[in-house]
Length: 379
Image 1 (cartoon, rainbow, N blue to C red):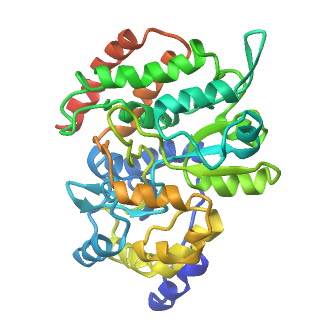
Image 2 (cartoon, helix red, strand yellow):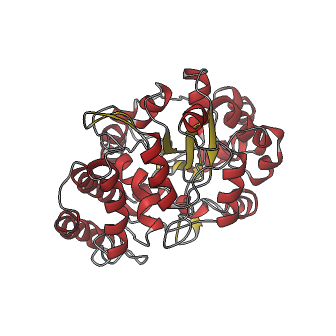
């Protein structure tokens, strides 16, 4: 971003551009303090659009020229995650087209499974996981299917979305009025039952081995759901692991499609005295060339639709899964004003369920707290 800002600084003589790298575990507290004081608030910042635009009401709506440009040029499957009421408030840092199924081809062959034929339904996913898991004296030594069960609660909730949506569940109502009848619906319960059964009934997924990222690269997991960036992570950190990437399996309610709880984007402080200049910075760095360069540098998927025609995409292992996600388009969008707090509460409930707590009762208990945040967001 510093390198790509040269043209911007040449245009705005005498302007100082101070790029501050905020550690992930500090950014929300530092943002909150900055926006509360006003004096230390950033002119441009990165975060989740619904929370900063609707919840804290500090993110500015993008100018008309950028609304037109982004509607025309940026990936439409993820656009709702960076918008509020159909208007852009955030320019995507990167996009994840949901997750895909990563699987170890050597383990498939050893289990008598064809690496060219990954599971295409959730029933098949369960059967494959049973064949791929290694269990000794009731202890899982290798996950058949690795599940995110600990860490940041929002991450736990996010990684459960394919299961929830495959069975017809949702986190809360599309109009953000209530979680009752959605979070605790039959579809959500069935999706979480599938996950819980892999751990506690089928015994093919462990809540002790470690995170899916680590166990997959260590050869301790045969399959996992993860976003596109994971391909580069495996190649860099575990070059000995042979793997392929496939689209989601299909559940009883259909294909899970693209849903995100993490929608990182650049935003402009609506109260900044340099708001117009800040938008000009985004005009300068927010272009197809820089987008592709960042995608290649970080192993991300690009933000601009035209960049999906670049050979970089065609040579990726997740090419087929990416095309499937683009074709299917967006799934349920979760953009409540206090999405950060809501996602945390949902993730805490899901973590209890993955550890063996009763599913319906745990979800019922979480609904009132989530409804409180939904109600606050409507004020």
